[in-house]
Image (cartoon, rainbow, N blue to C red; front, side, top):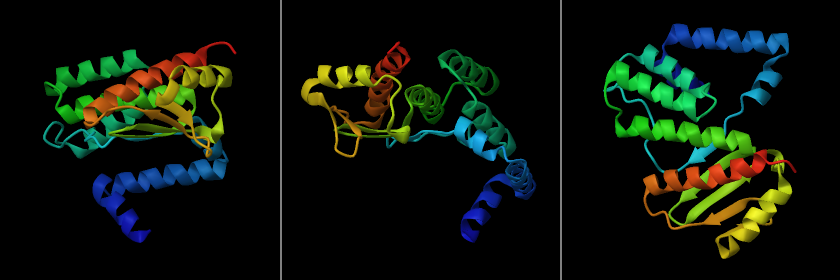
Amino acid sequence: MMEEQSGHIREVGFELYQHMLEEAVASLKAGDLDDAIEDQWSPQITLGLAVMIPESYVPDLQLRLTLYKRLSALEDATEIDEFGAELIDRFGPLPEEVDHLLKLVFVKQLCRRCNIAKVDAGPKGMVITLRNGTFPNPPGLIQYISDQGKLAKIRPDQKIVLIRDWPKPLQRLKGAAVALTQLAKLAEEDN
């Protein structure tokens, strides 16, 4: 734990780290940390792809951290596109890693709309873990899986498996975005 904290301090600087700790402690004391955590949960996405704002693109660490924080608060595709346009205006053409990062933020937003806690994508498809084991439109999800035929199933542990041919990480990113867009539309349909 101490090594992990030390790593965080090196990454963000002592003053910022201390400020972050003070905010967390104040939230805990106020009793609103549970509400904040519930409202701000973040899906875990594993695609095997480099996603970051490289130091060579934005050299200033504090500015990079600010950009990451802003990215985490974006709500929809329009905001993500506007943020990308701002980055291009300020820092020049997007490096591949930043382009991937923006697409990953979009995928995370789709996951939040679908109540998906985790997506693990690999060369043969992806495994989806629902948050608290629930999907907003269960009948729609069952129909979607049924329509996929042998390309989708629900495992006994309630994880959804989509079988695809995605040998390259960029194919996984694009494929996950397509599948999750379909699931997001289902999630928002009236039951």
